[in-house]
Amino acid sequence: MRVILGDITTFCGNAIVNAANPELKRGDGVCGAIFDACPNEEMLIDACSKYGKIETRYNRMTSSFGMDAKEIIHAVGPVFNEGNPLYSRFLLLDTYREIFATAWMYKIKSLAIPCISTGIYGYPKQEAAEVAVSVARLFPEFDVSFYCFDQENYDIYNKLLITH
Image 1 (tube, rainbow, N blue to C red):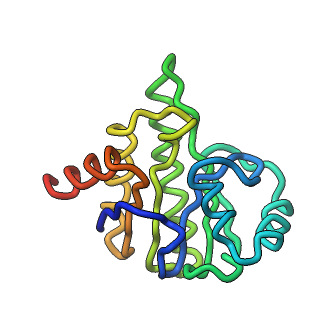
Image 2 (image 1 turned 60 degrees about the vertical axis):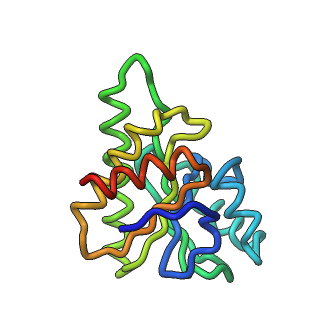
């Protein structure tokens, strides 16, 4: 496991994970960056549209349509619910477990994973990072790169990886 401060769309490996919305449409943040970086964006849009709406914690996989990573796992993380943080945690744990289940099923060995649910979905960054790292540690057979867009998330992940 490693943490990288940078653009997830530059990852050269088996798959990148998209912090997707339930409709698998172009969004902001990581999702927007992935659609922007895709050399064949129309093909990506078409592939995503065939799935319809995806429930929170599940994912779907598409080709990357010419990006350095071969596949994109579109994972729908939870919107943080301050009134029920335990349920939010359960959904985020399940989101990460489902990502690794999909990777295993498709024999993907190297994954680039963003900070899921910490942008407009409002999940507290420290807790989200703890969940991500704890689940990734359950799957040592995968080569995982956590991609952080900002210094704050990078520092949180880096500390977690160094101290544990």
